[in-house]
Image 1: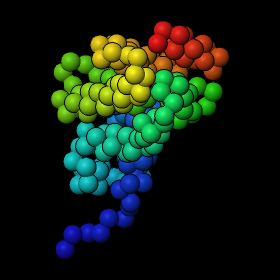
Image 2: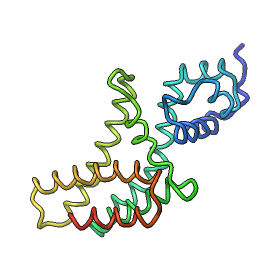
Image 3: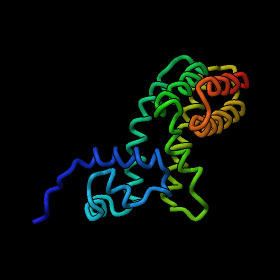
Length: 187
C-alpha cells in the first residue's frame, strides 16, 4: 500500500517557486529545494519527477498568481492606460523589499542557454507570447491603430516588460517610474 503524503503539494510548490524566483533555476540545487520545501529528495522525485518537474510546477503556480494581474488588464476598458497600470501592478507584485525580484519567467530566460531543456524554453516562450497577445488585444481598443502598428507596439511592450522586470532587481522606485513613463511616451 502506498504511503500517504505528509505534505500539501501546493504549499511545497509555492515554496519552491519562491526559491527559484529568488535564486534562479540554474543556481537552485536539489539540496536547496529539499530544505526550502521541507521534504526529502525521494518525495520530490516521487511527486515531481525531477528538478525540472518541480520548476515546471513552480511556473504554473507563478502564472496562476500573475494571471490575476493579466485578467485585470484584459478586462480593463482603459486601453493603453491599463497596460501602463499593469506595469505598475507588476512592480508591486514582484517586490520583495526596496527592489523587486523581477519576473520568474524573465529571470529564467536571462539565465538559460541554448542547450536548456526544451520544455522549459517552450513554457517561457508560451508565457511571453500570451502576454504579448493580451497587450495587442488591449491596444486594439484604440480603433485608430492599424494592425501593423498594433503588432509593432505589442512587440515593443513585451520587450519593455522584459526590461522592466530585469531592471526592477537593481534600480530604485524613482528610476523605475522614469522608465515606465518613457516607455509610454513612445506609444
